[in-house]
Image (cartoon, one colour):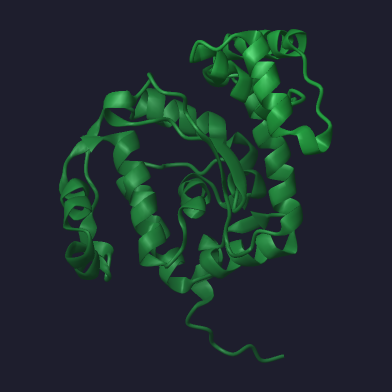
Length: 263
């Protein structure tokens, strides 16, 4: 059998294996990692980030931790911007970000920024960052590093870093399904219960009966009205409902609301 000459045959040595159980994730990953333009960048990226030997996908996290925390962590480097055709447009749209990309800084920061830049170059959202980084160190990518739908804690930045309560957000993408979001919602609720960063804020999720009534009585009491006057005015206001509120009920309601304010 005659085999036709294929000028893309060399790409076989660069092929990225894809481990994904969901077909939609498999497709999303394949349509990036099979792009000849992306594959042609891999040898350059691996050389720039001093990746001598590729590691198995299941050893990626250990390799990454060692690389960014030990072997190359404090090395100063910068991105080779010459390999990005869309860079000129980025410079026009976000000049401040472009200036940051030019700077020389520590290896992990540069690697992270480069992966975001690759997302920009290939029109992919940020949830591709970690699998792109994995492809630099491995000849395979895994679904565990690809989260189009994800519940996560967002740390406040700048002045309020470490001071304000970090919010929990659920990120979605065009491929997110209702079931995906429900699953991440469950994870978000679990984060709120278990993550120490959120432990000092535990909102009441059980609704106190008559909360609106108790609040109104509380503020009437703040005004200086007696319990009996509050009860009489409330009963008169709701006489069409045959409300026979007594001052004892007002007292209990105000006390209940005061307890809620201290919780």
